[in-house]
Amino acid sequence: MEEQEIADTFGNQISFWAGIDLQRVLPFGSVEEVREETRHLLMFPSAGKGRMVFTLNNRMQGNVPIENFIAFIEEAHRYGAAIEGVKENE
View (cartoon, rainbow, N blue to C red):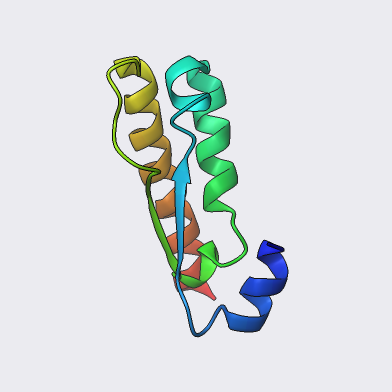
């Protein structure tokens, strides 16, 4: 699927469900890779329009280091708040 095209065409009518990779990034990536992936997902074409449900893909697995999970939560909160602040100032 072409995310940008779908967001441009239907972004004001639908919401997107986005989740961080639980098979590779969250369990085996570095803390910085988790932060980068989180920011990437938050920059999804509709994210700045408030049209995204941002979560884990499925459920937290036992092989996820707590440092990576904390990095995911912190970055989602910090970067998501920054996007929200931009939206409010428009």
